[in-house]
Length: 116
Length: 112
Image 1 (cartoon, each protein chain N blue to C red):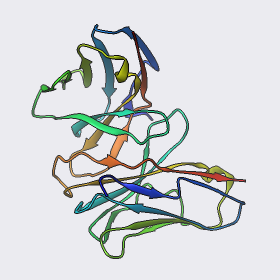
Image 2: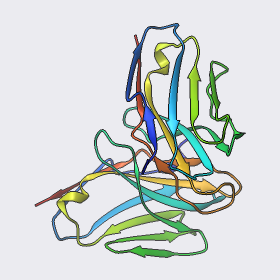
Image 3: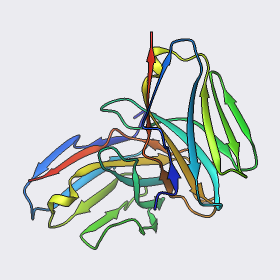
Image 4: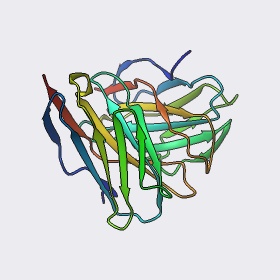
């Protein structure tokens, strides 16, 4: 597609359930990023991939959060045993090249996650 | 600890006038800066960027200025249009990292 596509747009689930958020980057983009955005704040970095390799996961809050990009294209962010504090907008971004190149990151419209 | 600060939560200007959005940063290792525009219910859209080796970058109505000694950057929109009304985020990237650090955003309203 033309832009970064995220699904679902909205996800409501009960506390304790696992959720999987999907990101389809811009075709041909090497790097893929996950961010989380709280209301009234800017996006906060979670993790990023170059191709299928996870290069930096320093922003993942705890071990309930994981991400993968097995074929270097689509990525899934998984949150296990969800808690109410996980409620936020989760944003995915992609860029044309990886480390050290000044390429902007292009964002999708996000997945709004609500934990009841 | 906010490394990227946008101290004005909102700004209102008249159509046709200049809009100036400001951003301050604390980390001297930041070497690449970006501005994003965000409409409601959409993701941030890349607007313009600047490398730390430059002090100005221009793209149509949008110009970004970087003052490294003051750790300050600004986005100028001239002339402002009602369609420019959105939340503007400043972001910075540290040398050797791919992580973007964002400010909290400034809501710009351009009045017809």
